[in-house]
Image (cartoon, rainbow, N blue to C red; front, side, top):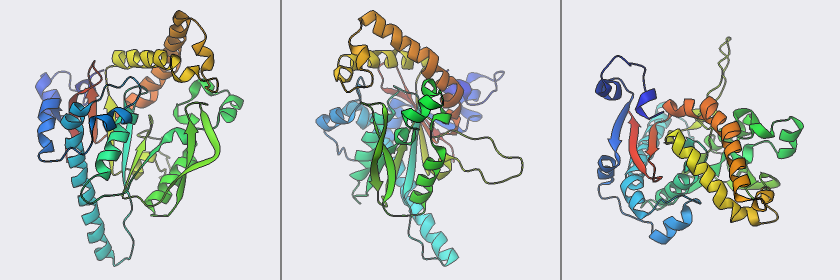
Length: 330
């Protein structure tokens, strides 16, 4: 399932026409994309990038320079254009509204590098000369607590759309886009693998909000009566999908599980502590089962179908670094 193969079904046309003339995207190699950074300064150090990247993610300063500086420059133009449009509309309507945060959605499979991308972008954007306030929220906190998922027999559907409190997600984003102060996002612990009761991250009118999660571009069935049915992505000003071949994501997921078995899982408080005490072969078999029975199904049924809805797609290669970039045409 490559980037170009799903863009538009024109199988009878030559590949170059499928990819260029009829696709809603412009396509760039990593080298071509890197040229768009122009004179954007590098504001991160190698040590900072190392701290920002997730386990098993080899993103380094070279990748930031090649991919993320250009992306930061692109996003700066979108934010500036959004602010200009807001001011023009405010004058047109003779209203006294205050500008609302520019919201960037980041989607993609588990183990593909969404968290690393989100953290690096948050740091780069916050270091623009204008020093914008940038906040980062993940959808993990909006999962139903494990007690609810267990009661509803949905633990093996955790991460699927139905495992999220969509109402809470929409209320959060509505408040953000309404410019409300001190909006609370529920917190999540990857150690206990559960929502933390009565613990929140407070988001107070940032200039930019990055909202990261596997299913943030998920659509919903539309009602026959024409009533408004909001989607999470309705609140996004720009969206990014992190992509890779299925076989690569599979390998990254299993390798990450095995690495965690030697690190975080050793903590007795870890939800997955039991996997640190079994044999390596048994642990690998469990990782394979979790991939095929849960994460692969979620990828096929819910995550991958949202890829064409993104404004920008970063396609990674075997080394976990970006090889291609697709940017939606205006």
